[in-house]
Structures are given as structure tokens and as C-alpha cells.
Image (cartoon, rainbow, N blue to C red):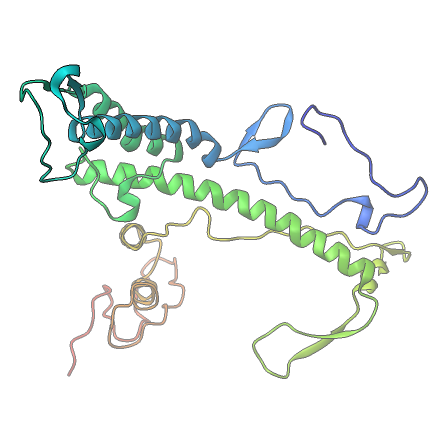
Length: 308
């Protein structure tokens, strides 16, 4: 499709089969921000370009003003006898002149404060508002943020942007892998050994073209249909502090057992806990059932037993 919306046809002749399954080329678009009426969306970089151009322009103004201050323009009287080529920025020059007051430096006007303020606004706020990725996400102190609640809000906003990108990546990978299986079904005509587990000798022999002859309910062979879902952790807390707080809240509500909490602390948080860290079996919901009664190393109320 061209930029003006003209749809281009495939290059193979009419009636000729395409090399690609279904005549579809292996292009997978993942717009970060969709635009109505176009398959070509926008990304963070495109949205940041105007802000970056503004920051570059303001930086140039600051540098130009600094150069005028360090190397000012001069007014030199024509009858002073000063050789203009000899008047440079080199230190320790001896320049003969008929009048020491015949040279005057033009002082550069001071840089307006709003130039610096506008640059800081674009750098610290506008760019972060577009990407929702603040200094808090890199471990740097955010200017103007002095409380834990403010830092948490900024971090959660950055996590939302990251989760959004993960969701789009999941959708694209699902589409890519489904297309790969289409290629396997079309061109994988020889049996190959495939290992599906970590066991070194656990192989199965598989021919991809067999997916075109799957017995249907009516006994007739049909092509296999693929519905793949890829998960890259979108929606789950990636920050260990947030994950610990969530696990603590779930345990306080009785939704997870103390054994599951210990397994979480050992496997995910890396706490060197002693004793068994296996999750306790599902507690009975019958009246009178004792919680954590079957967990090794724990008392009935979920506390760690003292060593004998």
C-alpha cells in the first residue's frame, strides 16, 4: 500500500500460485499508536522528534550566547592603527595602537531566563509525558518529586507504557508464529526429529505437510487451523517490591498459603529461608479445617516452628 492509499497487487501473474501461503507477504506491522484510516501508525520516536528539535534549538541559543560572551564582538576606531588581523583570542598579544581607548567590546545581552526554563520544561516534562518513561524508571531522582507516593505514581505510569508495548509484542509474535506454521504446513514435506522437552533423547518425528490432512469430524481430511497466543509477561508486576506487596496482600486475604509465600520469597525474591519451601496442599474449606496444618516447618497459624 502506498502512502496515498493505493493498494499494490502481488507481482506473480494471474492464476499463478504465490510462493507465500495464501499470497500473503511476511510483513507484520505493529503500530504503537494507531492512526485512523492508515496501516502506518506512530511510535514514540516520531512523537519525540518535534520536542527534540525544540531542545536542540534552545541549546543552540545557549551556546551562541556563551560564545558571544567569551568572544565578544568589538568596535575598533579606524584611526587607531590596530592591525585587525593581529587582533585574535590568543593570550599575551602585544598589539601596537595610537589610542588605547579606540577599542570597545560589545557586550552580549544576557540570556533570558525563559530560554532555560523552556528547555528544562521540554527536557524534563514534555518528553516524559510523551513516552511516560520518567527518571524514576532508571533509578534517578525525579526533579520536584519528594514523596514516596509521587515516585510510585510516576513508576506506575512508566509500567503502564511498558505493559502496552508488551501487549502489542504478544499480538505480533502470535501472528508471526501462526505464519511460520503456515510455511511449515506448506513446505515441510520431510520428516525431521523434534525435541519438545529438556530430556536429551525425547524426540518425535514430524512432517509439517501432515497438517494439511487432519481428519475432520466427517472423516474428510482438512487443513489444520492455528490459534496461537504468546505471553511475554504483560500485565504482571515486574518490580519485586510491587510483587512482594501483592503477595503479602493476597496472603492476608487468605488467597494464598504461607507455603506459597515461602516459595515466592525463595524462588523469586532470593531469600535464604530454611526448611521446606514447597507450597502447602490445598486447604480444606470444610468447617473446622486447620489452615497450614499440613505444611512442613510451619505451625497451624502459619508461623515458622522453632528448632528443637
